[in-house]
Length: 327
Image 1 (cartoon, rainbow, N blue to C red):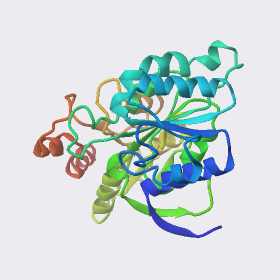
Image 2: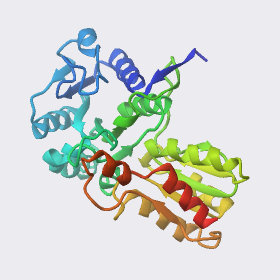
Image 3: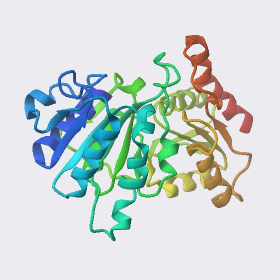
């Protein structure tokens, strides 16, 4: 094993991109401000200087044009584009091409065309960025067959999953929580690949299962650490990829603990949280000792007011309350 050092989530993503650009000439990047400014959050800093404008393409503000170029480039089989959608909230501008073209082409052409591309996008609330720049929206993409959907929580997962996503032959929507960009964690220097569709048990426990995504993983772990002192043993599972989903790990955990709390920052209706609840109801009904609890935001746009936004985002207190209620 190589050296493991602590770097930020943003830096880990930069390393994954740097590694794939250096190893595979097919990999190119397209997006607004990704070259000159290193992206809105500085995640792609330094890559333009290293690889030049032929491979790091600063695109105009026209998401539908950018994604069209990326899908066309991928369809030729000659390139593996990584398209940065500055904020996940902007997907509506280019949605037809994502769900009607990128997601369906491999199927419609009997496998003759492969759309090997990644859509990187920043999401997540807590930055005071208001209703149009703060959504997470992974549930929306998981509804559409043909797309893979990845939501990493740790720097190590972000690096390993992004390498796998770029190497995947299907279009992957890779959602980065902007509240995690500065979070540091141990990341191996050598490129390790984390396969899509393998959940990670972030903490083992026997009394209750929490399935959590992105920033909610950290809050759930905080609750698990706190309640452990009272003799409550919580298992925290991070699915890491929403599509494909590692149902086995989740189901086995629920069967072991008999209790489930799902903590997710996406909207509550027809969502990732309700999907996991449905899996629990259909596959673990006999083992469940109490009703499933969902800790999500309310079904409202995200407030700009800092006090209201703080109330909107699922909190450590709300997670703890849900755990205590079902125990």
